[in-house]
Image 1 (cartoon, rainbow, N blue to C red):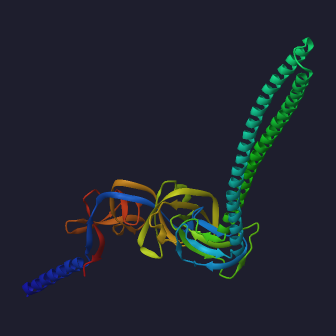
Image 2 (cartoon, rainbow, N blue to C red):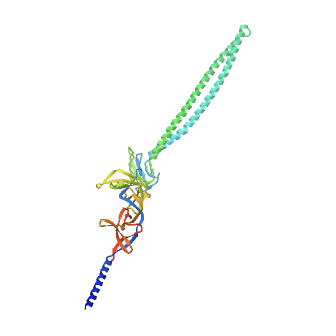
Length: 414
């Protein structure tokens, strides 16, 4: 009887021990996904929201410099225009007539003045010939006068001694008087010819000066008329997207102190990202830092830029102080549009060759950071000291070494 009771107690003890062990094994923590502690890089990231804005000079307002009715308007909002492309035409009938008159006047000046100058040059040459002829005539008359004077004086001397007649003396005297008259007339003719030559030359110079002045004025008038005529055609001063249209065909525009605006052209490549950084983070931002951002229109595409400016003036939104950080230099800017919302990560720093684990491996428990270290088949809860963390990894300062295995997630064995 005693042996039977002892056997029953032994069986009960073994059964109790078996159930205790089974219970412990049933509550055991096991890893679900395991990774190794490795060396890598971790970034200090400042997350902020921003807005796409056009740079200074990215938008150009195209206006008109003359008044008139818009007869053609060939663009609409959203159109892409090339530099030099025709945008609009203003009624230019009066300007066209002014241009025709200016051109005709210029052609008339070019046609008539050279002819008049050529005629006057012929007159100058003719006057020069007359001067030369008068000089030759004067020379001949001077020689004739000398001869007649000698003959007169000889006859006078011969008459005194009785070797000539009174008749021959009178003839010599008459011929001397005629020679003297002819000489005087030749001198007058030369003087008159020289005056005519001078007048012809002065007229020639006057025509040349007048031609030069009238040609200059006619060319200036033609240029002015042509420029004013060109104002009736509105061309794109640069390539870009039409972001605003303010006039339509049939409307009348009036040019005054401010040129009436036709369209606004946006250069899609000259955009910048205005990032609103909280005042608690702005001290970490410096020029040259990398920025990675996304927009809602292209959720799967990332844009890279660099910080180029930090505006000193604050912007207060919903009682929160922000500072504007300007980022530029991103590629594929033509995909973006002004006022698009941006979701930004400003890379404030990078630590390389440090121990890192995926973010999901680090847990917060009982006021400290812990990881589930895998040792053999066991999972051990290990406290760790962490450093920087970004969207992927967390830096492990102490508590683990390279090559250690940690569980990304665990579960209780059921």
